[in-house]
Image (cartoon, rainbow, N blue to C red):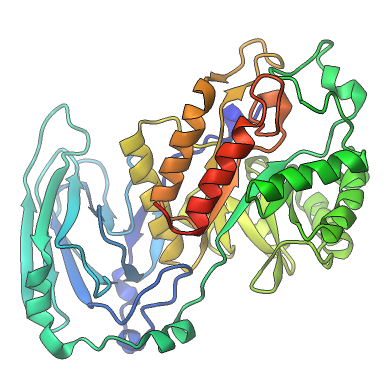
Length: 463
């Protein structure tokens, strides 16, 4: 049941801007379309990226913006954001690419950004007004043999932008903003596993868990347990469960039928984590069953009026993305993996396991993922996890020390900084992998209390 090796797809794909999309009439497009991005009319800024390197990108470190343009997936081990260009290795051909962005009127005093590039050539960044007035020019000539990204950090004063635009910017009244943007409800959801019964706690031949539940070795068919879990979750500020589902008539399905009714009785939402499909036909049957059995349930999670389901990484290993798009029916589907191809035709993306990398790397990774999702008007969901320990299931299992709550706090801090739409707790009760926040004999209510504290911060913008 270990997910760690197969769910840690933390590589952000590369994105190459297609210049051809900028045809007549694009200036009339609404720059405030992305979910959860609060903006007014903003500054329209043209960015020109000129490079003789084989790849280059520009990333703002303290500025959110709306991007007009399309992207395509490329393949490389270097993470690039939307404002980027990628060529063949060691291709020094001069390349000039244009982008159009809309930073908000409310700018930080210093606009900070980084320019990265390959190990050859140089890269120039030009910022211009729509009238082709040059605002600023920056050059990265860095070519260090042992530096794979040759990153240079720059900044420029917002007054340069404000002076160039002056009174030409029309700031929309707040009363009009709701007509321009879709506000995504900020949610905290937790992955939930309704698969327990007395025998399967010992499915490896011995007790297969790192920690002991306060409720004992319970059964997920016990309505008292289900109600207790919902009550705990609500006190912790959790809005709903993403329920692991392994097919029609499975243990998870049988228990979920009961759980759906209890959720409705307790004003608590639930949705499905689609874990497995043997092929396209199997997936089509599963989607049809979920639609007819669960999607109209009063407690089923909805996004913009449509029922939501989450896709686990295992599905993507057997089902092509085009097939997944074709059979999604009337669901809003939150796909797996922070790649642009995983957004096309879906309503958002997520991951199950937080990255293991250092905090600065995670911060950049989440920023790029949010940039991709929000500039395409999609949901960006971020995982938080208290720790990991599946050594009682796997001989060579994975162990991530909880550090008595400190690891969980760092996960939450990184998630809050990324300003996601939804935060996903990995997990409420996956005891076999040791990721549970459900009370245990070892930690008591520590993780329920920590969750309650952080959900308040998230929902009140206290970060």
